[in-house]
Length: 186
Image (cartoon, rainbow, N blue to C red; front, top):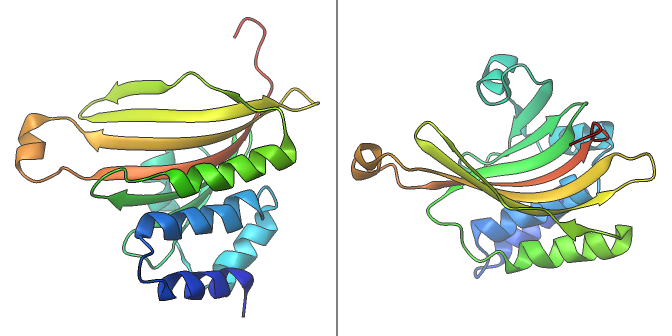
């Protein structure tokens, strides 16, 4: 039985555990411990019978960016790999609220301590149509001038009519990303 499957079984047995904690554990195991080894991530998804999304489904979210994604069989939770130039691993899911991110911050802090030299990034806020996107995170500059970042993204619908009709949930994602060197002047 794979390590991730054992981890998921242990997590499912904890009655006090929440979906946020399960997604945090998956992010830790896959995006922090296995990524950026894409083959290791793919093997974990296969071993755990995650259903790969079609390229048509992936394009809805990623547009023309090269990527793959898997349904984690958790009521809409997905795992994504975006391929370079922005190489990223993310766990995404819908929630009724953002929730307590203490566990996420704890595993991120362990990873940051192991890899070193992270600094906070400016919070990101953007309104894209009816959706507001907010992100916070930390980054470090690697010796080859690429940037390694850990982010938490939250997005929600802001349109009053859509919210009144019941679209009040949040979409959350944890992202581990390697970005190419910044262009001069950025």
